[in-house]
Amino acid sequence: MLKKWLGLTAPQASLYSAPLPAAEGGLEMTYLGTSGFVLKTPQRTVVLDPYLSRANILDTLTKPLHVQPGLIRKHIPHADDVLIGHAHYDHILDAPALCKLTGARLIGSVAACNVGRAAGLPESQLVETHGREDIACGEWTVRGLPSIHGKAIFGRVPLPGDMLTPPPWPPRFHQLKHGQVLNWLVDTGSLKIVHIDSADFIPAELQGIQADVVCLCAIGRKHRPDYVKEVVALLKPKWIVPCHWDTMFTPFEAEPEQIPGVDLAGMVREIEAEGVRAVVMPMRGKQVFSR
Image (tube, rainbow, N blue to C red):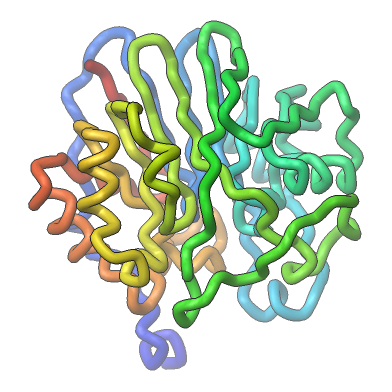
């Protein structure tokens, strides 16, 4: 009854996209919910903003946040690199554990790396960046694009600020400030993916980049005028994958709930009105992208 009153419902199944045409040598993308993705080819696995542990809303608000290593190991058995767009809990909490389990590097801002330090990651697995530099990931290259956090909650930026020293661990949700925000450009050599994990960006930082796929945050987009239109004009993608539309409080293996007020169907219409294909993925869903 409470969920119905709050408007917490699963997305319409009809919004989910059919599988894209398969082609040899494509990039497999798995959606983890929130802004999380696994990008995989036979040569490399890069994970973006993993958050699988997903405490319910009461525990999130009242208790320290704990990770679930068994769940992480089950769903992401291998990773080479873990990229963090910003250091809010729903983007970074599981990243140190994933790096410990797989030996992956954690790549992100000073704040992101301080979260890694708090969780006990060695310096050898931390790569700090302020953006605007190419970082080799095997045969892939990644680059952080300086950005800003969207006005995601009641028209305001939640939990602003930086973390110049390691935060408490395990943390309370409010102890993880966003730090420097980075959009990520992932270049596999055959495809370019841009990951925008919060509904804002700095146009000058996206100029001159042509993306094949854009992973685009949904929550807070109404507070950024011409959000979709400007992203398309700047990056000229073939596909846009909406993300960060679920409440993040349902268990990872359960059906997700759409955030009230996030008009996912309307976002799809906006994307397609710009001549771009919207690819809506269910939680744990996979798509293969290829030129």
